[in-house]
Amino acid sequence: MGCESNAHHSVWGSTNCNSRGEALVEFLNSSNLEILNRGIESTFCTGGRVEVSDITLGSLRLLKGIIGWEVSSELSMLNHRHILFTLRGSVLVRLIRNPRGTNWGYFKGDLRDRLERGTEINMKNEAGLGLAFHWVQQALISAYEDNCPHRPVKTGRQSLKWTVELESLRREVRWLFNKCRSDKNPHIWELYREAQRNYRKEVRKASKNAWRTFCSSINDLPRSARLRRALSRDPKIKLGSLVAPSSRRTQSEGETLELLLTIHFPNSEVTQELVAPVAALLARRSNWRLAMRVATYRRVEWAIDSFAPYKSPGKDSIFLALLQEGREVVIPYPVRIFRACVATGYVPAMWQQVKVVFIPKPHRNSYSRPRDYRPISLTLFLLKTMERLVDRYLRDEALALVPLHPNQHAYQAGKLVETAPLYQLVIRVQKALDQQETALGVFLDIEGAFNNTCYNTMCDALVRHGSDYTIVQWIWYTLESCMAVATLKGFSVRLAISRGCLQGGVLLPILWCLVVDDLLARLSGTGVFIQGYADDMSFHGG
Image (cartoon, rainbow, N blue to C red; front, top):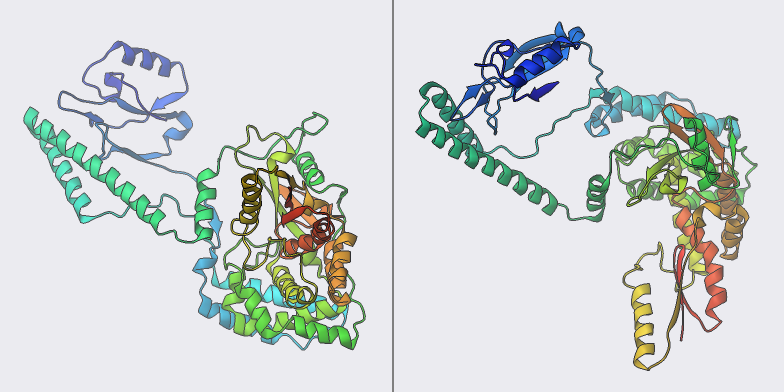
């Protein structure tokens, strides 16, 4: 423990003793703390006095581990000087793999060698599909781990660019400081303080300019959203004991996870059973023809490139960057796997396990209830790629024949919440007011829309819009076999999802738009102007 004691005593090298120093020495004699100062080098320097007033305290057990305690000769921006020492002992170093530091050249070569070692696999049955999926997954992970070794986490990043002008000012202040210590001239002390103030001013100015430059360089929505999340994040909010609807507090990590999962995913059950793959069905030629239209080489490449390369991975730890960097080597394998999954309805066991994390909602007075947190699912990127292919097929094929209601503005190219629904609504309200009429509006937000929609309702909506039965079958199996896995302090809870879609899935937006489309169509013919944006709707009459 380091402190500016404002107490003087000869025990730590002060030039005199005062009452505060004597009281502090008496306290230290009655405690388990030792003074770690070495020598009598002054720690406080000003024009009127040079004194030792900064002391370092530690327990007797740490005394032997302190090495090289000294007063730094490096310049500080205050009258107090820096204290340096080394604490000897074992330090827990956190090691991580940073995918941005992967040697991509060697990664591609290793990936090609691993994939070519495998024998030809028959993907028309359940055993062959499971083996092919496991082989590609292990090849990606092994090649990544071999070419991206663990590295310690770096801390203490430099916040500003050190310039020649700042270095010149620092040298000037340091020269004046050394001259003051040897000369004791009051005029030199005044010059030193003036130079120190100017140095601090320029450092603050450089820091502000660096921050302005960084903010000015952000010119896209993803980076600005990431910066906003970083600035609004409160590190003091930690997920712990929560208050259940019965007013009883959870007593363990397991109870907290079960409460969160059951509140956010109602009618689902906590289970300890291991996940098994959905059995593959006997596919017909028509199923294979459709699968070949859904998963082509170019479409798989497009789907992979549509994701950010370093987004958080799922339980398999595969980043999209691995697929993007090794595209010419690995894409032929996912193409065959995706085709077989669509044709047979096969869902690998790993795809069914969705990692769920709970993040605190912003601007809450307290974080003691389950609704104060939002569930976010981290699905596997191979599954996300497959869902992207199905989503594109639905938009290009089914919705081209039976399109969504024109007043549905969510998740569609060329439509935005600011440009379409709000503009149309304001125009209608303004028209009614200009004509001295009454404008009546109702705004509806469907709570838990994504988490509470039944699977049958989603599949019925797909059929109404002309989706092929093979696609409906695969989506049904994917939804029905979904299992949420949440972890807190090493304790995991599994929840078998019985309805709804986990937020974060690629198919979730289009499935909800299909479900709510029937409501928009029914109400449009009743004389009410209705608009929808996902689970938000507005009704206007007048």
